[in-house]
Image 1: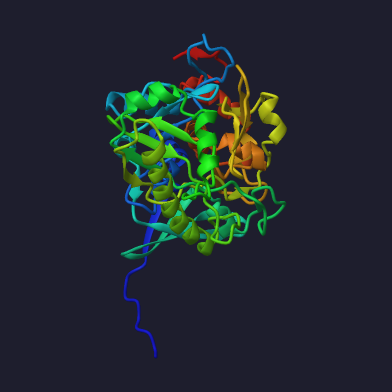
Image 2: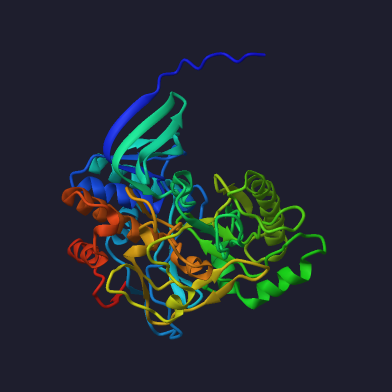
Amino acid sequence: MIGGTDRRKSLRIDTDVLVAGGGAAGVAAAVTAARQGLKVVLVERYGFCGGGAVAGMSGTVCGLYEATDRADLPPRQVVFGFADEFVHLLESRGGLTPPMRYGKTWTRVHDPLMWREAADHLLREAGVRVLFHTMVTGALLDGDRVTGAVAWSKEGPVQIRAKLTIDASGDADLIAMAGFESFIGDGKDAMSGHVQNPTMIFRMGGVDTSRFIATYGENTILPEQVSELLRRHHGHGYFLPRSKIWLFPTTRPNELLCNCTRVVGPDGRELNTLSARDFTDAEFEGRVQVREYARFFRDHLAGCERSFVVDTGTQVGVRQTRQARGVATLANADILAGRKFADGIARSPWPIELHAGAKPRVEWLLEDWYEIPFGCFVPICGDGLLIAGRCLSAQHEAVASARVTAQCFSYGQAVGHAVAMCIESSVEPRVIPGAAVREVLNRNGARLDAEAAIA
């Protein structure tokens, strides 16, 4: 059988900056670049922005506050700039909880719908041209220089020609499409490596949250008594492969955000969502586990006797896939050493939170933070492209800290300013000194040289 002819027209868009991906990093990059007077196009495969925070329903703004062993200390905020602006916008809409304990630090739970609406507001206010329901399918190249991307929508193919392009896909998709260097998880190349487990996150309504908190405490990492219950019942009427779980009260009454599943393949293999087979298995298995944990909570946790599943993420939550190979690479040792850099363009106080096995491993950085250098967002080879978000150049355990929402906002703000500097000076990203980007960020509220502030 001979197929018909696709009669859809190929469209072309010319712009200053193309941003591929509308997660926290992509939104921050697009808004920041547009505020510098640049024409910006943002391409997002869903009908809303938010990435892992919304589609994956991570549901929290992590990475704002220092960790401490001292129970008498209030939350001390160390990340500002675009992250702070977005937090205040969510607060003004009633879409964000106050800081709540998460182990030795604090986090804040957001309303996913209000996250989308806040992003909509900022993007439209800045004049960003947004293409929802559109997927980047290839890189446009002139030699080893990225000159934009090919995208597809229901309308047909779209050629987007850009002076500079930002890969905020979360998976270093444009890096791979351009043939630039990358690696997977703890591997040495783009072919293999172990990554962190995906998680299907869900919301549970009908909870007596007052009774729940009175029984298990205010820390959103649940105590050992709950872990022991999970271990005891796993394999005895329930399938509960993860025993250390996080449950967060949300902005809505009688509701918990549940980060508790450990998604592996039906044969027990670790899953990498770069694989269509693995991504599909993760969605199937994730939904099965949601029902298992929800049933266990109803049967065994105080305050959950009449609880029910409200919804899950649009997709399984993805922590790690492919990393770009950058001019610099954030090392595992940089995290716990609290290392600072002259070209540091973002801070992170978040622990190494490594999800592998039944019990996630958390290593705390106490009353300190580390910095992420600009070179982690500049590809080691190729021009015309910058990276923003969790696909930064970082070692496996470093990604387990550097991937969270507040930091992705910071990366996007930095890269948004960097593209403006490049276009103004007609130079490639690798020519721009990271220290100069840091100076611009400090003039625009990032406060990278400031002390911590009580929240």
